[in-house]
Amino acid sequence: MSSRSSPKARGWCVSRRLTIAAEGGKADIAKPLEGVGSGGLEIALPFKGDAFRVAYALQIGQDVWVIHAFQKKSTTGIETPKREIELVKDRLKRLQEMLK
Image 1 (cartoon, rainbow, N blue to C red):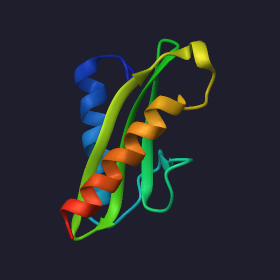
Image 2 (cartoon, helix red, strand yellow; image 1 turned 45 degrees about the vertical axis):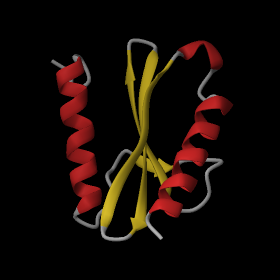
Image 3 (tube, rainbow, N blue to C red; image 1 turned 180 degrees about the vertical axis):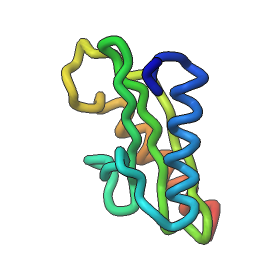
């Protein structure tokens, strides 16, 4: 069974990668999230033609903050939809203001 074959397995996979980030490392499948500026990273898990993505931020205090998680449908290619990027940017901005 693939580690990405069920919702529970995908959740475990993301949780493991976020734990690596919380411990100061960078997960093997984490990459910069284009369009949100420095500190924004994403974990993308492919599944049956779709992708599940988790956007998170580092360097905000001592914590790792999950900003947004969503299922990206394959109909728009590999690029993250603009509406999702805008939502992440807005949430990241609000989080940074809240933590000042």
